Image (cartoon, rainbow, N blue to C red; front, side, top):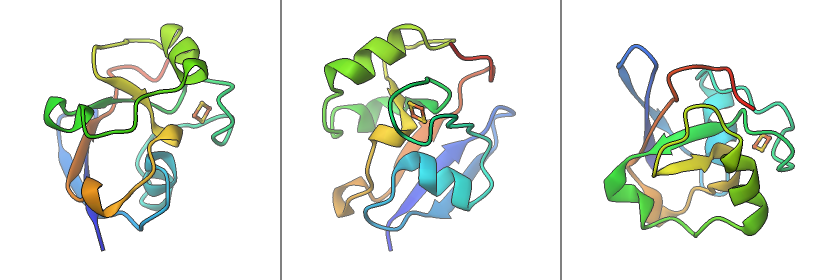
Length: 107
Ligand code: FES
């Protein structure tokens, strides 16, 4: 099973199992990683914001316009920011590393 790594707000890296077909948000919830995901993946919030490791960013399917719009209002936006509910785990993403934004306060 693919694995992914969450870098928590205190800088601790946590490696967890990431079942194929789940979103990064779902993987986080399954393992008690502190990502809110208020709208459960319907692109109506930005509380599932994660910052993708640079090396992985280009391997992801590019964001849709709707995702870009939500990211625009995300708190602590960075160049490799994505919405966790829009990244779906595939074999190619085994080892995917994402960081939680510094604050939970998101648009
Ligand atoms: S959970 Fe709301 S946009 Fe991802």
